Length: 424
Image (tube, rainbow, N blue to C red; front, side):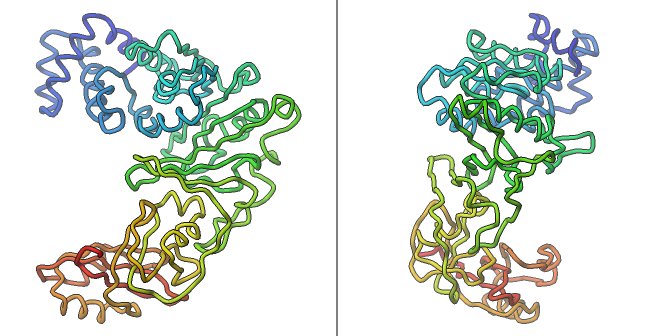
């Protein structure tokens, strides 16, 4: 879909074509295209069918709003889930009418959340089609009076003129998704330069962003939605004088902070974690857990195993979760927690322990056969075992189900067989 075809889609005739295309979602593509071509030209037919398909896919992220919004394939893929964007906007806006500059707005999912939270948003993007789509979304959702979208490069933004800088750099290249912040668009050094000139900044990054790329004066918040880690949000706030004097953290030309990396283990912090604030947030809820510096003890596997939410693991908060469940780590470098009490918490899934074995295919197969297990959910952390190959090699045939956990216990490959009955 090109810019001209998209603009035609916004005309009365284009909207009729889009409405007809939406009624054909799920139909055979050739049949759908043939039916629309009886009334519309090839370009409009293609644009309408593409947009109808994107709206259908977008319902998972945008709910009912998807029926009124517009998308591009890459824009939809990177767009923030509505619930996550709304959480971020509520935290940012705090009920005040802030002026926000969105330095790389994409299709506008975040600017919509910000505008709905009461902010006035000036947004830029380098792609003409994306700018048109973001503008159309603001208009379709009745937010045009609070939003301006301009074709421009992020580097041209003047964050000094705004209350808040928001940036969600694109994480795709011509070769696909990238996990290297230096390959973001705009690249991380450009983003950090903007941060260094802003009073407040909110940056969206991939959940796996290395700690050395996080500004020294930031708070990093990892956000999970229904058990899936969606993003890392970096919050920076400083006085106007400080914004003029300092850069975002102690950052060298590569964009990496001077404190160094270090993901750390489950019980030991990485080299870079103490210089930043850390928290994890679970949605819906929200539930928030902040770093306290607690370190989990180590000890044997007890009656229960707890699997922390991925946001807590990314934020190096396994010790804090262990404290919540009165637990310990069977292995100091693995993010599984064990304890003797059945404590409910949104921060971890709980499994009742049936047996702990040194890992051996033969012993595991025998143990599952004796329990009449025919269906197994396999979890692993710190294990090199190929899950799908193991599933085939187990040759299960019973009528019961269970969970097995492949892990290391004091650096020894082990398997934990969990009780198939619901935990007490």
